[in-house]
Length: 588
Image (cartoon, rainbow, N blue to C red):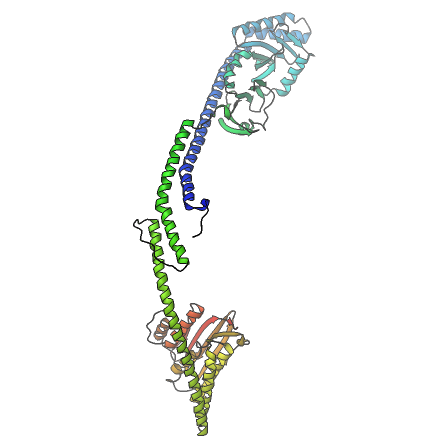
């Protein structure tokens, strides 16, 4: 037996398979657990982010409600409305307005002192393009100063509603979150309430923990306030950036993952319907996804246990599988050199035991087949002798017929001599040097000789028609399929029904099949007898009462050309038609 390379040995392969079976599920389970725990952490952190954003929105909404309520009270102050009207009249008439302006600043200053979260209050008069505030050094700003021009442009071109929150530049230059509303009963005067940054920005500082970035914007994307990497954000949200998907989603809240530059970020958002603001937060996953790997001690115990299990399982497999396979291989290798012997019976009824039993059964069967081959060889030799003897008998009959023909001629029995001559020709063509298949034209010649014999018998009472097709000599068929059908038509159709009769025989080529048909005008058959004959001929039953010749022909057709039926059509007193189809077979 040839030596097997170590890495091809079944013992090594079993060791590797065992290792895979033992370690792979553990690794996959650990990997699945790690992925599941990370997914759980993502969901938990998304919920935490939502809670933070929702809390921030509640805090801002409470503050905004306070400012909104306070500014409504200021706008309804009758004394403020009165002095505002005095200021507008003085500006319109070109008289001294300083007293009215001072009273406005004083009233606004008093209101600012009532609410600690307010930074400033000021009024904008679009008719006169002027701003009046309580801010020292900026108590009145008039056109054409740049601040007033910018505010005028904002008022007419960018302000979206009569009540609106915006980050605006105050008269002293500070960027402040401000609430805008018209003064009560005065549409041409806008009251601006600006919050201190410390009143709301400091309250949002908790959103920036864990390396988080966050921002607050309007639904259209204008940033009210935001922080990223310690820097405040302003302007408009980049819709192609990490927050773009939040603006595409119409849900009240949600979260998703966003990847860029090899980093994966978790983004959460909350839409405040009351303020029409979006609260958004983005946190790198690395900040909350800690290493979910196992401790080194576990790896050591896992490895030691796995190695011991592998060694033990390998020993068991080697004893129960590898050694029996090697033993079987030794016996099989010996059988290649002609030393075929059964393997000793294995006590354990396991898979190797089944292999041993199968091998022993194969050896026994092989010995039986060798005995059968020897017997078959003897039978073939005997069959060959019988065949040679039959050939001698057929040639002997042919020679005897010729001798009788010569003697009939000598005795001047002309009719008998002609019949013997035709019969002799029939046998000579039928023998055909032992061939089973003949060209179709020679088969047609056989039928002509047979019909010639019958004509000599029946005389003018028998009319025969034989139809052929061009090129019949190109095709061959079994020579014994055709004459028995013609013989049946004459014997069963005419002999017991005297009088003039006609028989029509046709060979037709239909596509790739030969159609052979014999039709007579004999006595025919009753329907019950015809159905019984059909069943006997075309069935596989061994017992049969009639139709021996047709049954034999059907079996030859099925054995040679596959399952095919012989078709019979007949009526009592109107003759019979017999037809079969076989493939057209080219001759060699």
